[in-house]
Structure formats: C-alpha cells, structure tokens
Image (cartoon, one colour):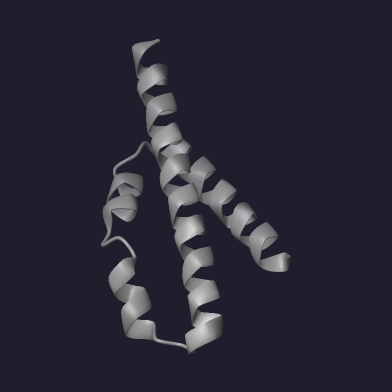
Amino acid sequence: MHKSLQQEQQLLQLKAEALRLKLLTNQLRRQQEHTGPDLLELASKLPRAGLLWRLANMPRKLRNKLLLGGALLTMIYLRF
C-alpha cells in the first residue's frame, strides 16, 4: 500500500510538472509570435533535466505508462 501511495505521489508530481511545462510553452509561443524565434532564450527557460532524470529512475511499468500518456497528450495538443 505504501509503495502505491509513493507511485501515486510521483505521478501527481509529474503531472504537475507537465502542466507547468505546457503553460510555459504556451507563454513562450505567444511571446515568440510577437518577437520572432529565439531558440537560445527558449532553451534557457526550460528546466535542465529534472523531469527526465526522475522518469529514468522510475519503475519500468510506471515509466512506460507515463511515456505513452505523454506521447498521447503531445499528439492531441499538437493536433489542435
């Protein structure tokens, strides 16, 4: 039971991080429409590798579920 609570907490943290990144990309996209592309500035605002590091250290089952969910969310987001 304790392990599932930890996994649920990690999942919620990753979802919060994904939402924060989505909001950041929307904000940067709006700024980019007004000023033009500046890839160096975009790269400096994204988090280093914290999300990727946490994802790499997760159990395989949960990691694969999160990757699939992220891929599906990305496809849905880019489609609209």
